[in-house]
Amino acid sequence: MPRTENLSFVGGDMFQSIPYADATLLKLVMHNWSDEDCVKILQRCREASIYNDEGRKGKVLIIDMVLNKDEDEADMTEVKLLFDVLMMVLLAGEVEN
Image 1: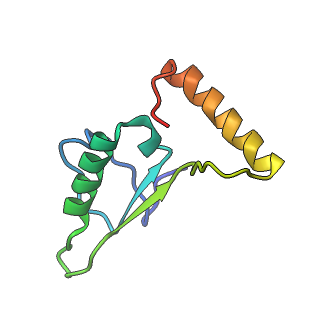
Image 2: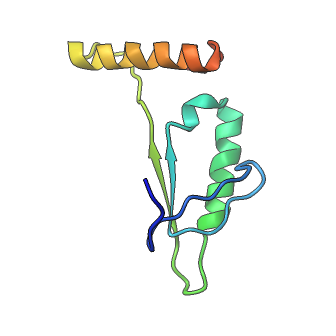
């Protein structure tokens, strides 16, 4: 996805700081970290979204797989299993559920 007037990508250490943004998107990020680290990331997001120069608050958007213990339809179960396999391959099985 290319950078546009309304969209830019910023690299850095999200445990240190996150620059102010109208919206911070965390796509497939939170499942990589422990609960404690997720809280730290969300605290940095909150700091970055308090207010900008115009007094507007930013937003945090989280896109991630939601797992539950209830029985799902076959399609959703397959997606969850494939997601688990992908995480095991990419992260050597070090993912929290």
